[in-house]
Length: 294
Image (cartoon, rainbow, N blue to C red; front, side, top):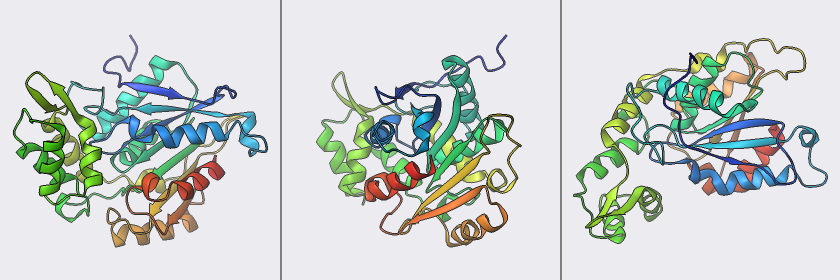
């Protein structure tokens, strides 16, 4: 029996039509999100590889796998346990199912910690990893700088069915969140019967968030990667932080800053103008960093 038989998350493949991928990268969204959050940015990245004069990677172009992590998007009703480790195991099963050469992983926020757990389970074979404004530290949720626990409380408090999508937006904004966050959360609202309902299992998301804040995964960054075999590139891990992000604690920023000196396989990039939402706040800056690193 396949060691990774079981729940497989929903996914979508993205690549440039004129550049058949020689290797693939998993793309992992943040909490309350879905793979669709990154579709526009990833399409741009994929298509750039087909441009004339692209860097040497054009000989081995990347394709991208937009994943809906467990209990997000179309990946509903996953079996317990609902942990970072379980989400990483889902990715191993997805790799088995697809049969593609997966040599990279990119994760934002919650997805970044899932990416680290995935790297922990793939000691060899991953050439490129991108950690996008994700803090590997364990810390109490109330001290995290993350808005996620507050978002969860708001979603729990909204009576369902919801009369309209606009009523949902009003409720989120009345709780103190921006219109942009309300619009993003509204991607999880669907018409159902006599109104609209939130397409999320909030109990599962609470378990995932609890485990997210409890896990410390710095060792995945700090431990030397396995030696690459013949014809396989050495692993490189690229950390990209928003200069204005409150999701990365000062202590973690200091640790990131010091990391490349003793872990040369890690590079750290700061986008000064960006907050936590790198692909929204500074899409060009993020694009330039990732394209150069590929």
